[in-house]
Amino acid sequence: MIKIGKQDYINFYDIFNELGFHGFLLSSLDGIVKGELYADDTKNPTYAIMLTADCYYVVGDLSDEQLEKEFFTLSQSDAFLDYTGIIFQNKNLSRIKEIFGKHTYEYIDRNGYKLFKSEVKYIDTIIDSADIIKLTPNNIVQFKEYRNFKEVYEECKRYWDEYPKSSKINFSIALVKDNTILSCCYLCGESSSENSCELGIDTFKGFRRKGYAETVCRETIKELIKLGYDNFNWHCYTDNIASSKTALKLGFKMVEESQLAWFRKVLDKK
Image 1 (cartoon, rainbow, N blue to C red):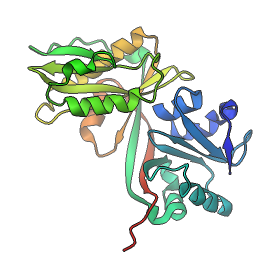
Image 2: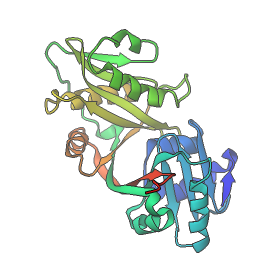
Image 3: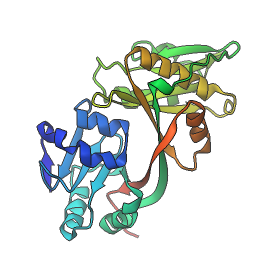
Image 4: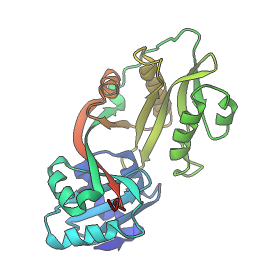
């Protein structure tokens, strides 16, 4: 296994296509955010792993015996975080367990959804006495006294710190009422090659099932269309029924399934 130079990332779009449309993965391949790519070959890879600040993505034919040793050795090196998530195709579940053993745990089914600009339905939703706020790195501290600010700030910074300051997606859309952030839509990734963005949503306890998530997501999509993006991606755990329902209400269609395994580098000595 060799570390791939950024000048050769262009050779890896096809092999990573098996995982679909993950925003952070595409951003890394596009060179927008930092990523480390390892594979068996620079020009014609049969397997590869992309390490990003969000998750690690494994693709290709994982059957080779030597691959098992190389992947595990890499996972115990400084290249791997102590804790992270590994995303892969469902068919590779047993192989991932063989490669990483007890270092991976809590295997979770995930669904991926896509929405094209031509399919967006423009619906104006009015929430009485609530305001739509565009949060940016320059204005977010103005809301530090608002309820749920800490959670929103940490999630925003998680993505803003990875993207260039000049990025068009350094913002989030929030629904605010009575000095409380009710719901917030985050931008979890963008791709220049696909001209897409990925959305994430968080609606706080006590304010769910009121249409707030749908409202902030619609406003976010409107803003992204104004900025010139053509399509939008969405991922969630399969058992996150609320997130799936929100995606479908917005017009997203399910296009992929994948698995997430949590990884820990050091095992307990018990």
